[in-house]
Image (tube, rainbow, N blue to C red; front, side, top):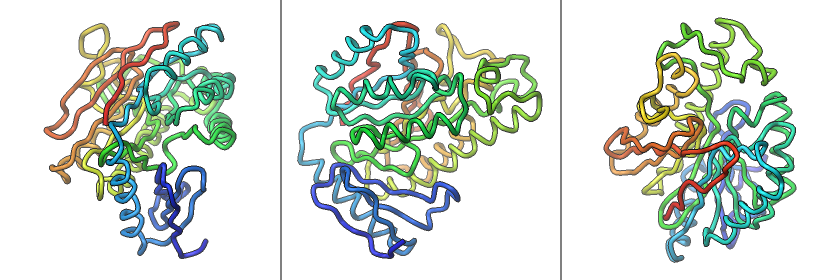
Length: 326
């Protein structure tokens, strides 16, 4: 890898990438549009942050950026013509882009469904949810989503180091996350998700399953903490897209707090701990978490400068949760 960071004209997005294998920000990358990623070493981090700042400033001269937030679309529950009708409505909504916080489809259908979303022509940023791995495994599904993103330049899966400028001094980052098995009754819960039946990597028993869940949650928390520390250098607000609510208080069902037996699978405690630490370390910055998974619409103020929004959802009825304005 070359030491020089290349600066690209007409920045439409900026990507700052940590080494995906080591999760160590030794190498950083700055990308623009479909121009690819150029790499540099740790000493050039401040230069990359400057590029992000310049991209945010250039966005600030635009009108407000409108982002159509969707979650738990579950396209596997509807017919193709219903999917297309929904996507046409999104394309005509006036939004400048789309963000999806997981559970788009299933492993076998996700390529087709992501391709349909790409057909809107709008920049689309997404994270996967647990449902997206059903009838598959992590490696195969992740390879499929990566292939789709290579095929369609307007599709970006968050979680590989991306920092996306939105409007005036706002940045979007994200990671799929996972229910890490720590909330509520923790490993003592008798409840098991379909995940452990339908996702090959999670066909585990007892302690082995909860060790895996904790590993998934911790990996997402460490990732968000490291990327957010870069994003916050120039952004006044950081939007974090993930699938699972990061606090048990935000994880609700039918209008009431989640049952302790279900919370281990519906909360990413590790992510919440990282987000709270970042928010308290940067009290003058604002942090907005958008997520789904519970299908229960709810907003919770986790801290003075940290808000969590959970999307509502109904199987067979995909909808835009909110047009976010930046």
